[in-house]
Image 1 (cartoon, rainbow, N blue to C red):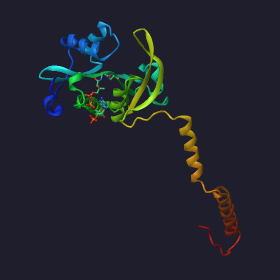
Image 2 (cartoon, rainbow, N blue to C red; image 1 turned 180 degrees about the vertical axis):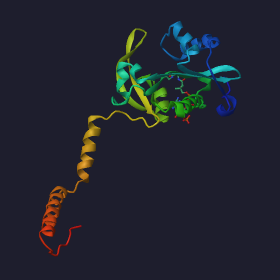
Image 3 (cartoon, rainbow, N blue to C red; image 1 turned 45 degrees about the vertical axis):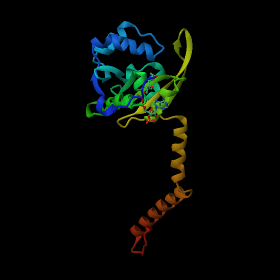
Image 4 (cartoon, rainbow, N blue to C red; image 1 turned 180 degrees about the horizontal axis):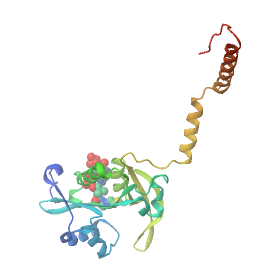
Length: 237
Ligand SMILES: CC(C)(COP(=O)(O)OP(=O)(O)OC[C@H]1O[C@@H](n2cnc3c(N)ncnc32)[C@H](O)[C@@H]1OP(=O)(O)O)[C@@H](O)C(=O)NCCC(=O)NCCS
């Protein structure tokens, strides 16, 4: 039986960018973690194309975790995720899509995924990336561990995606989870509009309108009296 591992993720784990030499290791890890076959071009892309923010967590130079994220402009968001951002946001606004996050089994529950996510979030919240308003991902509806991880990290469910995945030829449901950044906001739902109207109406005094009209009329009358002669006039406050 293997001994429980004692190590400090903060001190002993290093982060670095993935490079083409990592393709073999990353392929093996993704085959262990995900029930999805990615084409070779995907591995080539995530390890060399600068549009991906692809980080490895290493322990004694061995990869023990990865996070792969693509930052894309609003018009490039897939149709099923288009309502992540409000429609009035300009096309220059960006989102970050987490394609992959995984940690080697023996190293789980040591904060490695948190370390990778923290590094991504620091990158996305720098001043150069202030136009990136959300980070999101898709997860199998049955992947409770990943869901707990993301919820712990303040991601919130955005959509239920029926039959989003095809696993072994069978359709499986998914969710999208989102974390808003840099002042980003979700679009307003009908409920938001109703509660906004409700709170505006609640702030109005029931007699506010008649009182306002009365004061306007009194103001006119006062001005007429002043202009028609030296009469004593007490203004309304
Ligand atoms: C999801 C995954 C990346 C988490 O990695 P990790 O390094 O173990 O995560 P962390 O140690 O940073 O966990 C942070 C928090 O997430 C939650 N969490 C993580 N794993 C959990 C588990 N097995 N059970 C319950 N909560 C869990 C906990 O709240 C944990 O904080 P805590 O340890 O202080 O209680 C890892 O389990 C994994 O690689 N799974 C397989 C691949 C996968 O499903 N990826 C996600 C695809 S969308």
